[in-house]
Length: 171
Image (cartoon, rainbow, N blue to C red; front, side, top):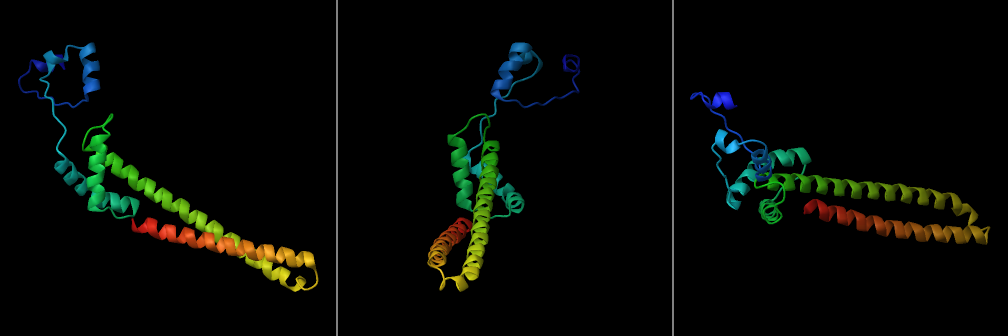
């Protein structure tokens, strides 16, 4: 870099974070090699346009839809919780992670629902197998009633899970 500095036809552009710049300044006299330009974070409106540009790619990748309100909220949250990243990168990362988390949560709920459906089928089969013995044995009748109660509880639980999945898919 120092040799090319003296050649007038060489142009070098670099980006860094404030932390990396401090580390470079401690190691080298960087201010003598480069002209340092501080670039502030872009305004929220610009960041929303950037996310709007990435929206279709994220929707395709995560197989969900992203509302305009979600984009606005993401930019606001990313700006309020700025840490190691700056806008618009922090907002894009936050939106991508939010989409991934939503898909993960929906997958978990679907798996729980399928597990409940398998359990319900098992209980119904057990009840069908026990039906002939109910009239002959009080113990079989008691077990039959317990299975009926468990079937009812499982059906209620499945109905709640399915309504939660439906709500989750709409939001």
